[in-house]
Image 1: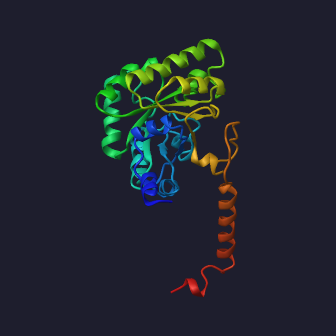
Image 2: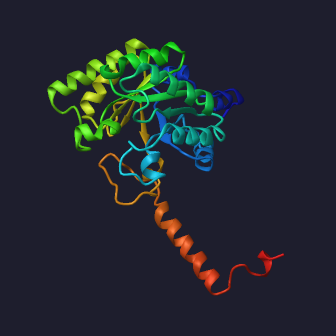
Image 3: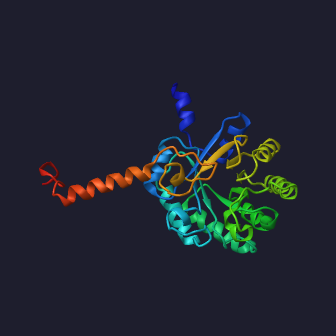
Length: 274
């Protein structure tokens, strides 16, 4: 690889660079991270976008939904990730209750996240219902990635994690919301758990990048929860998930070996002592 090409690949990923990737048909890779150590590994592996997701509520805290996680907790995770990342674009989720229904609360929340984490941009769930909050945040020069389809912060309204926008009316609303997000100035949109054909249609219609999760291969990029794709979570196997490792089993095995070595006095040995 030439020095020029290597420098190009290693340069900081920005919202503008994601737009360039869409224009030339280069797929965008995106993965969640919530702490320094994992974010460092993911960034050094060459990830384009790292999402500090409110899924931390599930995989880091053990909550059933994303709703309980607070703004302070998201800022803590954002700070941890930003301390590690040099190349990837870092997106932080605004958590439930910090932007819905009150645009002044939304801008205060957004400014806190940006100032206290140093993140590159924010992700917000919803369409026309939160347009005022989106516009107010954008007016402060803060980039926003939208999120449509299955929006986990609205799980109590949906009542299920099933595929969204299968019916014509909901599909048309999703298309309308996606166009609105682009028109008001969002730099990208995540589409979660919707029919692949619909996701491909939206991706083709929008000029901004579309990232899919459970939305088929027709999107401009893909995102997964890191704990899921590495096999750290157990008992969660949606159709869209591909496990690239089974670290849960490997960690359990390593811990058991450590316990055995300690119990029989084999650890530490002479070489591991001072």
